[in-house]
Image 1: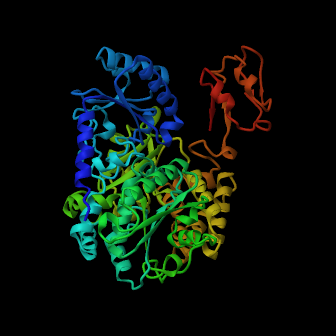
Image 2 (image 1 turned 180 degrees about the horizontal axis):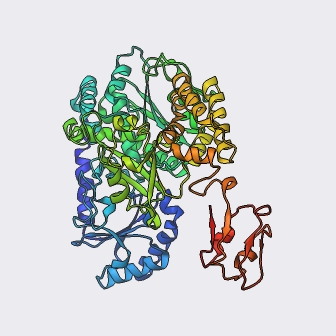
Image 3 (image 1 turned 135 degrees about the horizontal axis):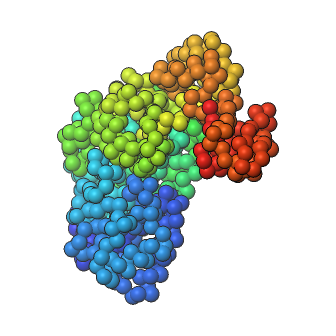
Length: 618
């Protein structure tokens, strides 16, 4: 069989030769581009060309430090890699001028540093000098932000396709499946089902035609883990799917990806094309006799298509609606054939497990939750971005050490974990280890990895209403419990937020939630009440304040707000009066002002404008 080893050595030699050249890398994932990374790219290229500098410029995916985008890395041979954050086109030129011409890094812009430089090693990067990377491990995200995702030679030089070559030359199908089972890998899409057992079921299902499907329909608000892998290291997904195809006996795979991810689709298409051109995908891969092709199916953004049976219907050209199980996809999936479905992060773990061994992977995590997990940190947190941590790490460590704590020195209130299907965890459970079982006991779930941090100014009733509104709008409507039950729950929550709550509403919400969880057709409907039930469990007093006292403690629910001017603090500057769109503020200049509650629309423009903190909401 033709070997990739010589090719890999050749690429690594090329990297070693180029290690004698200065490298400048600019993050051009979606987050980097949105922050202005393409302008930085243009400015850097123009500067290097004008100055005739001997510099290699490359684009990468997301390094995870979304809070510091745009990011630019500079590596001078023999020196550490310096990572600069919040770089603008003009500051990028200034940094390069100082760093390259005069050998002086710009400390005011440094957000990370790797003393080992740029090397094609298995454990790619361990940045120092920032708490963001202190507790992280880089397995799935190891190459993201380091390699050019559109260069297959980069992936191969950094150990890519070594695992595929190993299984095709040294391992039987059952040996591959047993290795995945020993690793303890559980599905990273939310359900947490053991991956090896899922593969084994598809392998044992009879039939000449089988499929491998990747669920890249990442629909949770605030979640972008899969997108970053697709944009920053697409070949890791292709390799994992090909290994799965070999293990279960499939020759065809589909990646179901959201059409809202155009950059991810573009890079996936190039990755597939390049892999086929090198004989790593397609017919008779590496002269092994194994053939495997991958196609892309773009979804239209329906949240329900994240459910595996609805996803398969969508690929088949049908309306995306779940079906009753059994039969499960492993027995009857895509076009009625045995099918294995995992999400992006699950497949991206496979090559590392095969290359480094099941023991390496199972050495991370807890007894029942092995390995690492990628989380998207969003909300009222100082450092937003992607964090890959060993499973079992505490919520406190993720929020306060990696995430840097709460913005504007506010108090932590809760974290929503698991997306719309997850639950809110309060400050009293910050020491909880993040693993599948512990989160379920708290009324939450791991989900795909969305982690939204909320501060003291968050209304938990409004949070529950927001997430339930999302799942209700995204319900496919097929089953009555989800279609009608979530609508009824949403109506009650909206009434409560408008100050029209009734004493029996809390019991009704709990009763409806339990019925929907136990009787809905699919996992999305079964988990839809979770945000409501979790907030009722931990923040019942806020519901009671809304219902019995007609007050929103956080001051978020507009209908329950009173906008008040403190006459002791008001200087009569008239700034509030000038910005009021409803002409609700009266008073003479240099005299205390007052608000007419009948006219006030509670837009809070006056609060934002007042320089004396004389206007408050209560």
